[in-house]
Image 1 (spheres, rainbow, N blue to C red):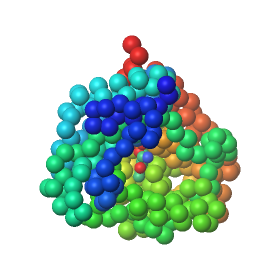
Image 2: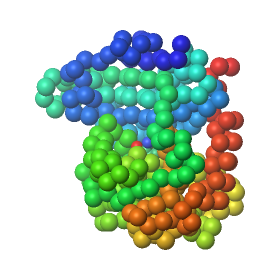
Image 3: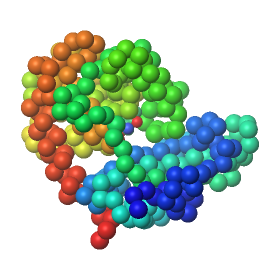
Length: 293
Ligand code: PMP
């Protein structure tokens, strides 16, 4: 078996059996939250950090998850175990649940809990070796007083519109600015630049999702003796960087070699990026919640 989908307590092995009602407000309104988590070497990487963020997102949107964190942890581990996979991707989704055709969340009596354990490949393998060409998108990241980007909600249209812009001009990723014009993040990944051996990434208040991979890279880099700054970045800082890379659970660490037609550094994945990637690979093999023992 290589696929397992949990829906409200039941496990399914076929996509077509794992269904939700069309009146679910996750579908009708994007009313819900989610997490993307990876399994490396039979271990769920940073599971507790993902669960913490999930429950914080739930609190922000006033959604009470029907499972407590320890039950959710067990459900995630059980879903992975049933696939038998050692390398996998988990998509954990909690929607407001089934309601009527109006917005009113009070009419949704029970949130829907979905845990999908499958595979994911976000970028072609050669992009990890050669690097991505990115463009700055005109679609801005949400203002924190409209939909705070620190909530990992099911509302991704903002990011998807930016992604569409990216493809339309033949680039592989897009950089999103916040409403003040500072760099926020890529369409679904955080961004780092390296300049004179120092790493900089925008702070969470720049309108980004505070990525768990981002925080892992910060820890890795500091542990390796790098100076890491969480500071506002302009797009000009990206053009002038020695190196640039993106981070995310799905994307992992991926280099950026060109931004808006400007070559970054010498146009190849840089040595600091490669050191960071090597360390990331090491820790993902050895850390995490063991599924099979
Ligand atoms: N920003 C956005 C908008 C995201 O959706 C994600 C997750 N794909 C990230 C950043 C990276 O977060 P994480 O490292 O926790 O996966």
